[in-house]
Structures are given as structure tokens and as C-alpha cells.
Amino acid sequence: MSVDVDAAMGRALELAAAAEEWGDTPIGAVVLGPDGAVLAEAANEREKLGDPTAHAEVLALRAAARVHGDGWRLDGCTLVVTLEPCTMCAGASVLSRVDRIVYGADDPKAGAAGSLWDVVRDRRLNHRPQVTAGVRAEESGALLRAFFRRRRGL
Image (cartoon, rainbow, N blue to C red; front, side, top):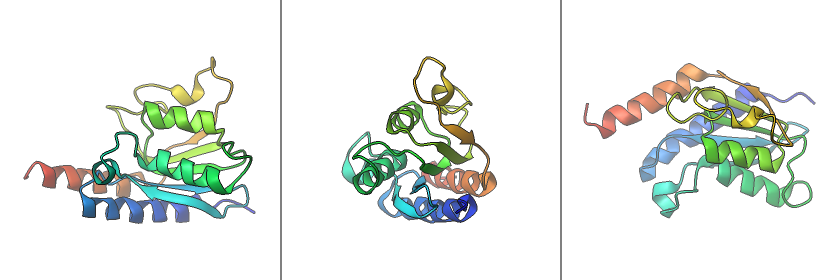
């Protein structure tokens, strides 16, 4: 079965928008199984949980690992996220062995899938997921820009 990343990104955008309800940066993530079915989804919860590691990607990867594979390997899975993963999330993606990372907006300030760093393609690591960038990037970017404008009172 083919993986519908556009629909998954749509869901990630919905999750991202919901994160604003509790004051978190609007970032959402969905993990798709090898068959394209949703295994897990999450939004940023750093503010909500008071946890610096509670990024959408980490939360979604943890949840997916509980329902797929051997307990932590996410072979054959796809991580779909609204913003390019940071170094922590890119590292978690590599270590979880996802096959593919699909993201919306580039993050030139902290992106680690090619913008600022390229953790996911580092040849020194033993796993390198395929990366697809720019899926519904304008929608993701608009959501983030609006959030930060409101935070800054603009």
C-alpha cells in the first residue's frame, strides 16, 4: 500500500494547531507504519509537560515504538512532521530506524535534516533515513509565523 503523506501532513497540521491551546509551538507529527496506517501522532508538549524533550517527533516516535516492531525499531515506518526536525529529533529518528522522514517547512535556525545541520544523512551513522522536504510547507510555515507574531504581540 502506498503511503499518503499529504493526508498525514494534513493531520500533523491539525495536531500542530491544537498545540497552541496549551501554549506550545505549533508542531505536529504522525508516524505511519509500513502499510501506511497511522501508528502514532503527537503535538509539541514542552510547555504542557514542562519537559524539554517533549517535541512532537519524540512523543510520536515513542508512541509508535510501543505498538510496532520489536519495541523500539521502526523499520519500514515514515515520520511526517510539520517542521524540519531539530538535532534531538533528527537523532531520535535515526536511532529509531525510521525509513523516511517527511517534513513541511525548513528550519534554517535549528533544522537538522539539511538546513543548518544534516544529522539524518551523516555518513558516520549506521542508519540514514530518506528525507522528503517541503510537503505542505507553506501551510506549516504560515501556522508558525502566525504563532510567533501573536507571541510577540505583532
